[in-house]
Length: 474
Ligand SMILES: [Zn+2]
Image 1 (spheres, rainbow, N blue to C red):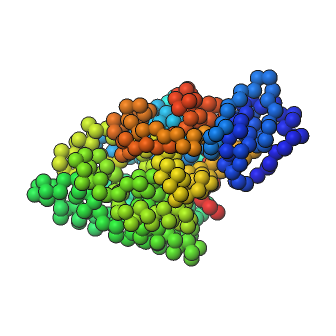
Image 2 (cartoon, rainbow, N blue to C red):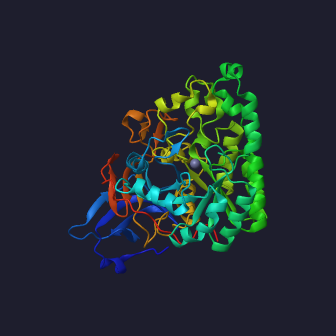
Image 3 (tube, rainbow, N blue to C red):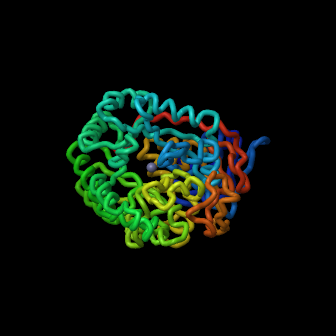
C-alpha cells in the first residue's frame, strides 16, 4: 500500500477527510486520516490538510473499516411458494446500516429463461432502488440449455456462476454431469463456480420417511434438523470437490455449515485443489437447539443450523484459513410468510434476514470475544470476498485508488436488535434482543455518506451494477 506523507497530497484538494479513526489497511491498523476525492480514496496519512470546502468526518474513537461485502444475498426471490420480502430498496438500506457497501445476489432463470434473461430480470429488480453497489452470480439451472450461454455472460461482465445440488422441485437442480461440465468451463474461462452442496437423493429419502402426520405432530420443526444430518452436506462437498480436483475448475462452496465440510476443504486445499469456502454469520452464533423453541420454525434455512461442535469448527476454519468468507445468505421471510408451514416443516419458506446484522454479529461475537482479530474480520468480510469475486482492489480494502467504501463503527457501543427499528422488511430477527456492537455510525459508498449517525441518509437508486473481468484466487 502507498503510505502518503506530506508533499504529494499537499496539492490534493480533498472533498472529504475521514479524520483520526483507527483505520484497518492492508499494511496494518493505525490511527490516521483518509482523504477522498470524487468516489475514491486519494490519500491515507496523518494530519491531511483540508481545503476550504472539504467535509470533515470525525472518526476519532472509532474503527474505520473497508465496507463489508455480502456476496450471498437473495432479494425479491420467488422461493418456497412466496417471494422473499426484502427487495432492493429495503435490502440495500438494511445493508448500508450494517456497513455493507456492495452485495452480490443470484440471478436465477425463471422457467424457460436464458442466462441473459435472468441477468436482465435481476437488473430490473435493482434498477432505481439500490442504495449500494451490486452485481449477481449467474445461476446455471438447466445445463444443456445454458452451457453455451456461459461465455456470453462472461463477456458481459459476470465471472461467477452458481449451481444447486438440490431443489429439483424448484427446477434448479444440477447433476454431476452439469457440475463437472461447468467446472471444465470455469477452468477454460478463468471464472468460478459457486455450489450449494447438499446430497439430494438421501435427503429426499430422509424427508419422505419422516413426512407423516404422526411424526410432524410429535416433532414439528425439529424434523428440519432430524432430516438433514451432517453427512447430507459433507457427502456433497466431497463429491463436488472431486469434480473440482479432476477438472481444475475453481470452486466456491457456499454457506458451508458443517465441521466435516471444513475438514474436506482444508484437506483439498493442502493438495492444491482450487476450492474455497464461505460460511454465514448465523452458522457462527446459532445452533440447531433453536428448533426446540416455540417459534423454532422461523429459523428454518437451507442448509439448516448445525451443532455447537460445528460452530466451533467453523470459527477455527476462519482462523486457520479454510473458511475464507463470511456472508449471510439473506433470504427474508416475515412471520406471516413463515406461518405458511402450518405444522409441515417441508413447507416452511427457508431463509433469514441478515444483511443488517452481518458486521455487528461478526464484530461482537468474533472480535469482541477474541475469536478473530479486527484485521482478520476485515479479511473475511471485505478483502477476501472482494478478491475471490473479482472486485478487488476497487472494493474490499482501504487503499489509495480504491472506492471510498467505508464503515465507521464504535468499538464498544451496543444497540439492541429490534426489528421495529431496523431497515429490513422482516418483522423478526434471529438475533432479536441481542446487544450488538458494530452497527455503522457512518457508511460511505464511493465517497458519499449514505448512513449518518446510525440512520440511512443516502438516495435509493444511486447504487451501481459492478462489472467484473475475473474471479477466484488465481
Ligand atoms: Zn443462498
